[in-house]
Structure formats: structure tokens, C-alpha cells
Image (cartoon, rainbow, N blue to C red; front, side, top):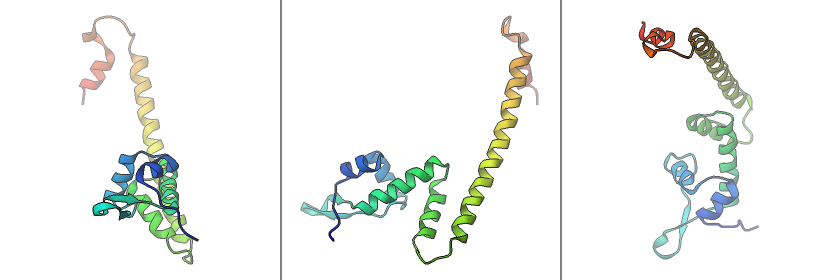
Length: 137
């Protein structure tokens, strides 16, 4: 079975990402360098495996994984016979990071609401309780 070859524009369209994104992922080694064909070997050629990898990256990014974490997930998933415990642990760690961020965002939300509720929303800015609160240590 021969793998269909495509150019970078076709890959971008199929994977739902921009051409610059593909180039960036290649530069960051999240996407392998493509083989090159044509005069002077200047044309990048991609396969369905590259589409699948980009879709994986896109879905992982949508879940908040960083490129470094995605690289780790891809490395862990590259051995089909490996135990899934390492992959599970990596995702659990990411969930803990998300929970920590949510706690911090909740603290920030409460602080902003308190600032807004302290301010009448009209009058001279020099008497604004928000400005006063932000100016204190």
C-alpha cells in the first residue's frame, strides 16, 4: 500500500492548522522534518501520518498541553507495546496543573470582584478605591 504524498498546503488544510504552524512544529521537532522532492529537493512532501500527528497535536493543545508535554506524549505513544501507566501519569500530572491554575484563577476572580464592588463607578479617579487598592503594597 502506497502512502499518499501531499504538499504543505494540503497538509495544513487536512489537519486544520496553518502553514506557519507546521513550519513551527518542524522547527521545534514536534513534527518530523518532511522528505523533500523536486528540483533542488526544495518541495516538502508529507503523508497521512503527518496529518494524524498534527491532529493529535491540535487535540492535545485544545486540552491545554504545552508543546513540551505533547512531545512527551508522542514519545510515550510511539511504542505500541509499552505499558500505558506512563501516559496515564503524564495526563494525571497535567490535570493537577490545570486544577492548580483553576484555583489561582478563582482567587484572581474573587479579588477582581472585590475591587469592582468597592468602586462606585463614578466620580473623580483620584478617589477610586480600585486605584487605591492597586497602589498599596
